[in-house]
Length: 532
Image 1: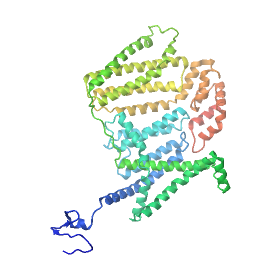
Image 2: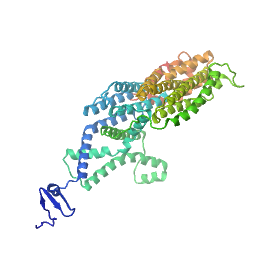
Image 3: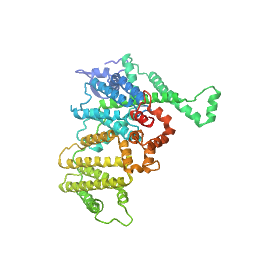
Image 4: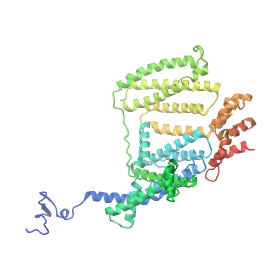
C-alpha cells in the first residue's frame, strides 16, 4: 500500500488501524483525530471558572465594596449591623443561585442555621451599642469565628466534628484566599472569552492580560509605598521633587486608597472562599473511635488523678471550709489571688486532656471512670478558682478582667459537662452544644453592659468615701469606656474627673463615634450625662 504525505502505513482491521510507530491497533477515528485529554480538562476548567464568575463575581464584588464602605477603619458604629444584614442577603443570593437555602445545612436541617443568623445579627447590633475596647476585641473575634463557622456549616457536613476538627476547618477556610488568590482573575478572563466566544489561547494574549492585571495591582500599591519612601528618605523625595512629581500623601487620599485596597482584598477573599466551598475543595476527615492502647491513658490519667485528689482535699480544707489556719502572714484575699491563673490553666489542660483521651484511645470502662474522676476534680478546681476570685473581688473590687474570668469559668463548667455527657452518650454533639452554649453565654455577657456594672459595683463598694484619688475612681477614669458613664450619674466629682481624663481625646472621640457613618449609641448617651 502506498502512503501519502509521509504517513505511516495503516492496515484496516474491522475499523481499527495498525500504527507502525507504536505497534498497536487503535480506532481509525482516534488516529485521525487524537484527543488531547489535558486540553479537554483545561477547557472544562475554563468553562467552569467562567460560569463561577458569572454567578458569583458581581456578588463577591458587592460584598467587598459594602465591607469597605461600612467597616474600613470603623468597627464600632451603626454601619456594622447594616454590613451584616447586607452580607447575609448576599449569601442568600449566592445560595439561591445553586438552589440552596440560607439556613439549611447539607442534610437539610435548619435549626442551627437560624441560630447562626440570629446570633450574627445580635453580635453586630451590639457593635454600635458599646465603645469598650475589650468588648471590641472579643466581639469582633466572635463575629469572625461565627461567620466562618456558619459558612462551613452551610457547605460541609459537620456531623461528628470535634473541637479540633472545627478549628482545622476554620483555619483552612481562612487561608483559602491565599491559596487561590489568582482564581478571580483567571475566572474573569475565562468569562470574557466565553462571552465573546474567543477561543484564542495564544501566549501573547495571555501575556497582555497578565500585564494589565499586574498594573491594576501595582498602581494602588505605589500610591501608598512611594509616599512612605518619601517620608523615610529626604534624598529620594528631593529627586522626585526635582522632576516635578509630588507624592505627598494627604489623609483623605490615604484612606481612599486603603478603602479601595480593602474592597479588592475582601472581593478576592470572598470569591475564592465561595468557589472553593462550592467545588467541595475543603475536606476534613472526621475521626472515629480511638485506636490507641487505653493502658497508656489509664497510666498517666491514674497518676495525675491521684495528685488532683490530694489537691482537691487541700482546697476543701483551706479555701471552702476555712477550718485550717493559713500560713503566717497570709490573708484570705492574698491566698485567693495567689495561683489563680495557674489553677485556671490547669482546668483548661484537664479539659483538653479529657478531649484527647476520648479522641485517640480505645474505649475502656477504667479509662472512662478515671476521666470522669478527673472531670469531677476539675469542677472542684473551677469552684476553687471562682471562690478565689470572689474573695479577691470582695477586697479589691471589680475590673473587666476579673468579671470576664468569672464568666469564662462558668463557660468551662458547661463545656466540661458536655465532655462528660459524650463519655456516656454515643455521638453526643460536643462541638455544636458547646458552640451554641458559648454563643448564648457571650450574648448575655455583652448585653448585660459589663463596664456599666463594673463601675456601679465599684462605686457602691467604695461608698461615700470615693474620690478622685481612690483606686476605683482611677480605674473608671482610665480603663473603662463611655459605657460606664451612666453609672456616674449623681456624682459630679467623678463626672468631672472622667471628663478631665478624656479631654485630650475629645476631638478624636468625636471623629470616631459621630457622623452618619460612625454614629455610636453608647458615646451619644454618655455625652448627655457628661455635658448636661
